[in-house]
Image (tube, rainbow, N blue to C red; front, side):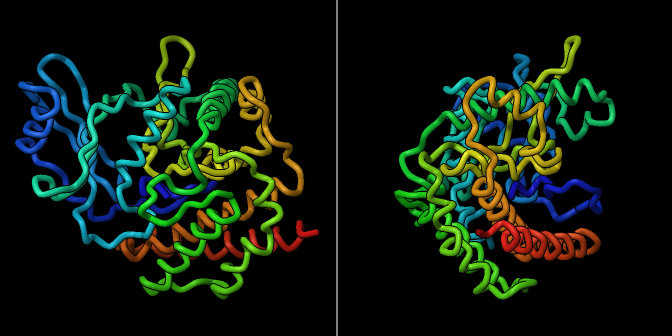
Length: 349
């Protein structure tokens, strides 16, 4: 999950971890010059919220505002799917942008190499404020209109079809020609990560590992590898206003994969259950059809919520979460996993 925040519907303790190492002002200027030619950086500001990549806002003398994201150095503890995340983010923004989604423009992606000990990505900056920062000032009518706009944008994201199911980086080994195969690999990878990092699970790992086979016929109902952002919570949605509020863009596509378009709804949980949100569903259906929200769909949503809770629980050790947030995450993930497993038992035919 994006390390920027935990998806939830209630309050959590404030998380103040040790931030990732960030590029200094001289390094920022040097990187920008490699991409843009001679430029003058007048101000750099570290952007808060990220717990995996570091993010810097660079303001140029010519008025441009750019975002430089830097991944941790090679060898930093991470989950299996977290290799080359900025390459995934660049891919997501390029594909989504071509589909008409409001996303940052990718200016450059640099893999790690001899001259670059860490992967980095340069984007243009979307001006505005995040939905979570603006939410106190939104009226119910504002929220309804914005959720309709969000549904439209997510339908456009899902219109993109990938070459295979699963995470887009083939070297991860977490993709397959069908969704049951890809989801099995994705779930087993995070269970292996939990074991590797010594993360305790509230239920036996074997019970969790058996879920894809148990519900393979439901996963097989997915017939196209749609692009999924999977982290479209309120902190990754940029709003602005010139009169009514509008959705200025969707950011941080580093957790994207190709799979079930309904998986997108799980990342929206901080805004409420999307599958039960008439405004978001109406916006989505104004652009594209949506699979029926029947028993099979609700089983798949429960499976994706299990997967997300496991990712968040497993990442707690390599991220070094401590204190009140670590305690909250341990409690929340355990309760969430237990609740979703009970729901799967109830829905199973």
